[in-house]
Structures are given as structure tokens and as C-alpha cells.
Length: 189
Image (cartoon, rainbow, N blue to C red):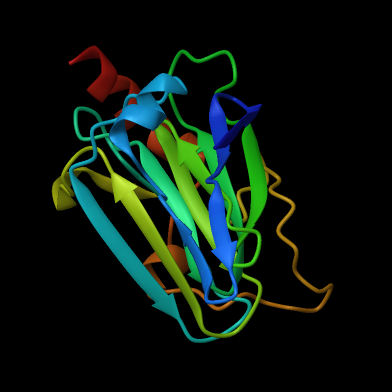
């Protein structure tokens, strides 16, 4: 397994694949190997999304403390531009983002620490994303941040005239600056 810190403590993980004439096999997560690599997460839930079209943006989503989730993201089919935004109040890198192209072909994954907002843009049609989380989903703690927040200035790989497809919730998501007071209040509680 190859583990690379791409910045902000977000890790890109490429599991080892065993291939032969029949195809390939890999352990995408194995508790002891991940712990030996410095990734001791104990996952609680697996999620999977399917997106039919290229150019869809899902996110930026996060859960407020104490329900913040670490996530292990991988693409089962297709490719995405995956983004993690540091939303940890008091962090010296608060509001900073990193991104990586994840694809079924490349077989890479991202481990995003708890306290980060997460989102992705589909780069192909028919994309399936699978991810593990280390805390349960808590609808009352879920928040979204505007994908196009000018303070974040995320360099989404959109064509110059392209408008992404968004859910109604993501289209109406507030700026990070609007969510900050609630994040700070939850951290102090």
C-alpha cells in the first residue's frame, strides 16, 4: 500500500493490486495494515453514491462536532475531482483546500480527516463512489458550504461556460463564513 500526504493531513492511499490473466484483487481496507501505515480509523458505516452524468458537483458537506466524520473515499467506476476543505475552527489551515483526481482506473483513495468539508465533481458519466465514515450520519448536524465560495476559490475543472449540475440543497448552500459561528460554538460545547 502506498500512502502519501497530499496536504492538510489528507492522505492519498493506493492499495496494492494483485493481477493475473483473470483480472485483479486488492484489499481496499484492512484494519491492521492501515494501522501500521498510521491510519488507525475504526469505520462505522459504508456509503455509496451513483451519479449518472458528468459535471455534477456533490458537496461541500460536513457534519458538526461531535458528529464530524473522517472519510475514506474511493471510486468504483468512473472518475471524480475530489475536494477536502479544512473546516476545523482554530486550525492554521482553516479554509484551505486540497483536491485529487480519483478514478477506478488509478485505484487511488483519499482519507479525509474529521472536521473537513468534502465534495466532488464527476468527470465522466456513470460514476460510482464508495466511502467509509467513522461516525454515524446525524441529520441535525449536517451542513453544506457553497461549492463556489469565493473565499475558498476551489479550482473545479469546469469548462469556461459550463455550469455544474447541483442538488437544490447544494445550490442554496451558504458561504463558509456563515457556517463558521456554528462550527466554533460546537467546538467550544
